[in-house]
Length: 245
Ligand code: 13P
Image (cartoon, rainbow, N blue to C red; front, side, top):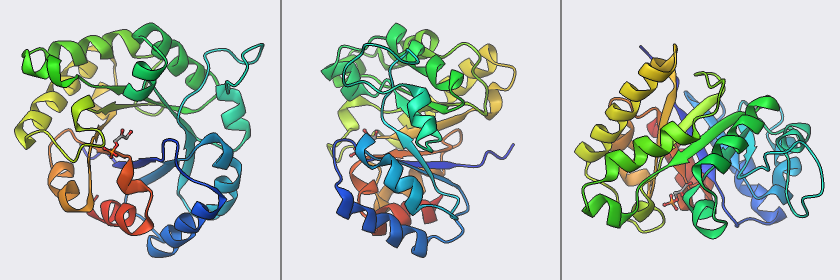
């Protein structure tokens, strides 16, 4: 089965209005990408980025949402607000939010369900720490996170799973290709058991993906794209990863 890959950029807490120049450069360099492309800038840039990608298939998303539709939640954004701003997707459960904001699997699941409620694609992040991998628990931890954070109503259309080993994020270290393959195979088997269209759910790899290693990682069976942090900030690097897909 062919699954159209998704190359998604997570700008994290980076980017000012001037950074939109990278998006203009990217749309010129990648006028007709052979994969789906998404950028998740900080919330301050969502509206302007939606305008900047007008007429190009690139999508714009957010990095987090609240589970509720509206209410007294100072500083938070609802999935409905992201959709209203022109967003198409939202990342939920990134390990930085799990660590910095104490988000557990139940909170991540509620956020993912909010994304689906608002008609957004939920990108659910899971991944083990280095300690968990060293203890031989990586598969157990990651499959446990998937079971507990997969939203009710998930389909291959509305949900994407991103496997991001915590120790590979921003470190320049990536797992052995065989370890990526093993994890993605296990995730695929699990999704097939859980969802009628689990064979088609996109499984992204994230963690120090760069132009130099993207082709090798993206060639792994059951890797259907990437979630890219640092290398998504520059059009040249992100464009090279899109080209590799
Ligand atoms: P890096 O690509 O900077 O390692 O970040 C990966 C990531 O956390 C994407 O969500």
